[in-house]
Amino acid sequence: MTTSLGRESATIYEFPVRNPQRLREMRERTLKKPIILESGAASWYHEEAIREAEEARKQ
Image (cartoon, rainbow, N blue to C red; front, side, top):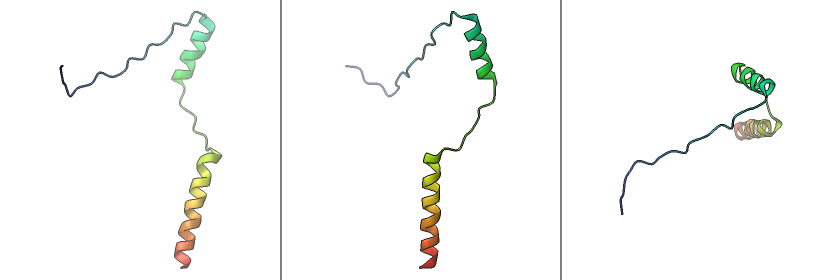
């Protein structure tokens, strides 16, 4: 049995795109800057933290 500290990481393979139009669209998407949208799921946590901080200040 061999023991080693190093582990191999997973390899991700990309499937080939056969449609030239889709290939162009995929390349355009990767060149664009990412769009960051605020999600309602994350905002409730932020609002709750603000409310708790205000309550702690009142006490």
